[in-house]
Length: 187
Length: 187
Image (tube, rainbow over all chains, first blue to last red; front, side, top):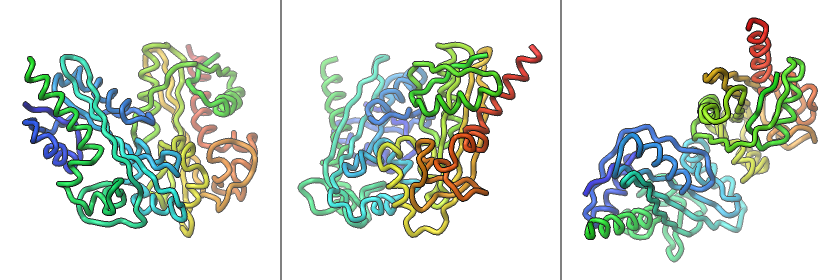
């Protein structure tokens, strides 16, 4: 089985491919303009983006959206994590948290897929906290500053094998993979 | 003449009404869901939002979007100024600029209006810099920390009469007002 993921981020494409491989699902990049609405919840962003792509590109097209919600910052950067990464970067986020004791954070990933003209959405979360400084060379985006609960290392230090078992993205895409497998078995 | 502005912000509605009054244009609030896309340029955000509203609400419906682009922060918060205000607030923006010498900033406002099934967009800019601390009680949003070029006071200190002559919003809506007046004369 094959899905087409609308993304311009090669790191995401590689990560999602690895997560879905055990389910026998191949991932191909769809080169399409992804329209994202401004909404605090990534689930709404992914759903709407998929609705707009479904009508044009048909079934098995998927869209992913990820947000990082930092408790002490009122949920910032939330669904605008990518924009914030591009502008103020990890340094800016760490500066905002300077002297702040509460470093709790939540990663949320939503994947929306078009099937039979409908949109199905799967989500995954990872809870943890923001490190005092960037650590590790693996992963991408906020991975060097996010330490998942129960661990002492950042996603970037833990490496892809561990990250792709416990991350928000792993959870969302594994739910999708399991659903596709089940759907395929009974059709 | 009357236009309907899709906004939930009473401050914006009042400000726009004052700016358009000299052009003989009344402003009424349109209670409609405004869909904003994620895009670095407010012009694209306003245009798309208007396109979606035009088909449903018809002519003389207007949508406004404003961004604040801070040079030293790579353009942050840009089109997400409202979200950033709601989460990290003015305190967060000032913390990001702590110890930063370059405080140059640009306000950009875009207003898109539906006329005869088409969307026209007018923009206005205000250049200036970010104050060291919030000052003044007038205005709303970032007004207490924005000092326009050529002034020593923030928009919040200058008060609405001055602000509504020189602000980004004044420039965008005055362009719209002049265009509507001219259009009306020759029709």
